[in-house]
Length: 333
Image (cartoon, rainbow, N blue to C red; front, side, top):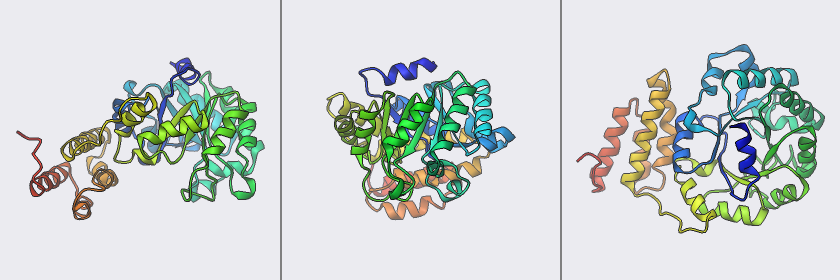
């Protein structure tokens, strides 16, 4: 399966990636997005130190289903030796299709330990990490970067060339700096600059919120693949819409409320089944409930009630009640 990823990225077809997103890109959501047309999925980012220490939470992050392939496990850390050990363990124990290195996370608690986008302050370190990880497994090593740590260090081409030289076999860029966080507009022109400068495939990421955005990104940048992150929140069908746009087909309409609720409940049931603690699972799932109900008439009141739910039965009751109030046919015949 490992070579399939590189074949996919180097072909005429434009694959769609589900981005690695902490607290979002868990196995149930990855499987749902695969069903809607995501071609490649990536795990939530996992601490290399946590993997090496064998923490239970790290093990939970590493689980995946065969139906998710091709899948990458994304790891983060600032110690090349620990990153190499973690990569080797993941490859030998879990057998994903590739190992992805996170050089993009802007979250303070990660950056302060020099992980994620914090590594971009030291490109020599970035190269040592890539070489260590690439040398530790036979799997493809890919990386996810931002355009720089801040405005003063913004130089995506220089970063990309260093990554390529160190052995990265594909690179994903979110063209914002760490200082930008998620503000402003992603500079897609920097994706194009990277495509023009590198020999390895470039995956574009940033501001893909609708199916046609994926087509525009590909057409404007020439990227080998398109990665969707926040645009997938409560909207896994964005992948079917993006695929249609990329293929020049009519874009499917948004699902109606009944279908949206059906998808939401499928996701919720799978999330509860996946977690060892059902009570914790439904609490963690509340953010998805907010996303699935965004934009609905009287949705704020519904979300307020859903955020208090403590069981799947609560969720089902509230969604059924909303259907009745809005005169929407029930799923139950």
